[in-house]
Image (cartoon, rainbow, N blue to C red; front, side, top):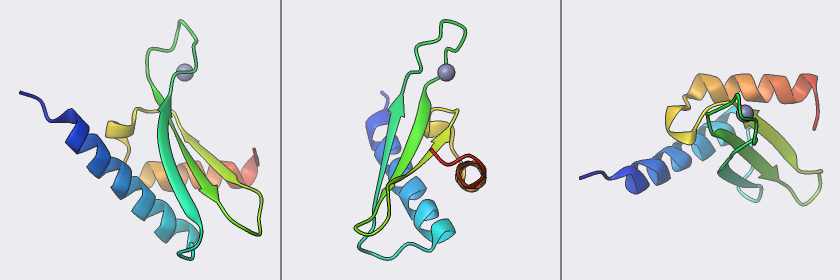
Length: 88
Ligand SMILES: [Zn+2]
């Protein structure tokens, strides 16, 4: 039997935690993590988007080209660097 849903919610919580650490986010900023399919037939992977929502600043979007379950702290860091170079 698989426990994918439990593992995924744990991983989503870990990704939120890493994002909070990397961006030094205060508690009032909200982090959401979700998977999406870009729809390209050549691209079988799900991607993951990390959104940071703040009262004062525009939302920040970081995309990792991997399914949620495969994301490490380094991927979050890399997505953050990418978002600085190419703001969405
Ligand atoms: Zn894709």
